Length: 269
Length: 259
Image (cartoon, one colour):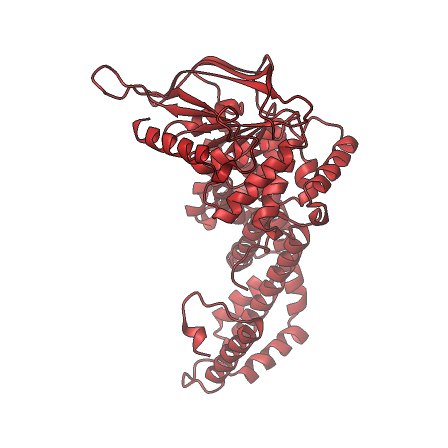
């Protein structure tokens, strides 16, 4: 596959974001720009990874990007508009669904759209994700994989552009992680409008699915002491490294080199 | 067979029926051959039941009690659920928390106040029952609502719902199965409380009055017969609420590990 691309419009921009909890800084002056990657002659979306060890403020950042929390300072804009809840699709860890609604009911519950149009879109979405036959089932009757598909389909109805995923690989076995990776790849290869932002601590899964990785970490002062509050400390363009958009990359030396590099970076973040 | 003595063992429905049957037979054997002469035998209880039904108007008294209890249960459910759901408003939380403390109060202390406020007879009986049931219902239901994980609210918010719609989906619909479960327990509490309430407000009669009278004169077969009616009606009531719960919340039992 060719790795030629051009950079398009800014999809998501985070400027000077800071957030404290109980007086302790969690995020400090965090800046981040996610731009559209356009591949000539191809229709596909992109996957951006926000990677960091546990306790680095990933969930705090996720909540702000989702519009669920308001930061102490700084701005988050989606295609130039200030972020607010419901503007981006949000798939939380463990793929939540409303237990009292059927699969179809979970999709038609989405607010802000005419019921008739929503129902048609929901059926179309279930069909596209291969779970239409389970439309009348309740979430507790679904397998893990089916549940993941329905949870993502539900959030797709909320957003045309960006889907945030919080720790999508957490607590899953390797087969399930592969299933999620394949599923995300399958979606982005058929939908140029979609940008997945995956917040995770799983380095190898992030490398397998992302086009770009942003690492969250904390700076150190001249004495080597950690300065509280995480920022983006490093980014990895996996397209340029020949890892993204390359089906065989997962077994390539570039993949393992990058894996090693991030693993060595983690203890110092 | 030894599996039934192992902790957390899942047994087949047939094995469970067998275990239940075993207990029922054991209970009947103990009752039939009990060395305690004070306990009336099953035959005596059945005769007393027949006499109470045919000669002393048990059916009429029972109907009166069932109606009062049903009415109180409905009113108590509406009041308690309404107030529990209102705990989403911070302004209502202290009110509900205070009302929940009412479960430590004795109903006897309210009989005079309620009589002066509402009058006697049916309305007194119903209001005492409503009060007695509501404080427990409110306590259980407000705990259920307080225990809803924050993530459930956030999830609903990400689905572009307005805040009252979030309340409807997460708090009202999301806890409906538990509301029925609490209602079941509450109905049992109300049914048990009936004797005390009918003892306080005797003018309308009822099965509770009948039980108190028979107990006063040490008519043990009659007392056991009325208790048998209490248990049977209580079980029917519990079963019916369970049926409504299943019809309204078919998803509720899909995740149970034990069958």
